[in-house]
Image (cartoon, rainbow, N blue to C red; front, side, top):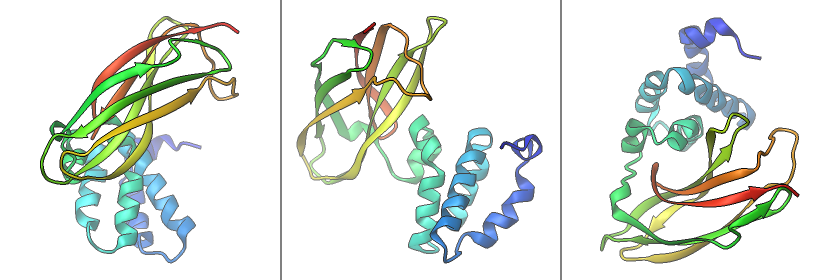
Length: 200
């Protein structure tokens, strides 16, 4: 349950997170990371300051920072991308294809694309895709899904294929109409393509 006063001013919780950042319990450290992620939604500068302060203390605190920054990474927040050295200009996306341009609710959209490290040196890539879902009011809302993170060797070229389910679930209601898929390279959207969602 959200606590409005802490959403407005999370500073009272920061000393507690500080004390728990090296706790031996995985669940406690995960809670610290989740708390940071919640804070980042309203106060990204606080989480960025903590990330700089905790960087390199240990692999465990680095993992807390990474998990606690996941919303900022999905948003393509410029400072967190710089923090992790994620540069999108080194990579090129091509041949984005939707193999199922018309999808019935309950089925899957299937798509593929090529991604290439255009540099001659190895570069780190955070690869994601966004799905723009139709809303009841006719607008769209993007949700980002992670594919992988790894080092791509110089001039490495890969083919990536993915499926996204439109199976009915309790937490999301689907609306028929035009949807869109975009490819996200180190926090930056590149290629995008439309597909149509229709009733079962």
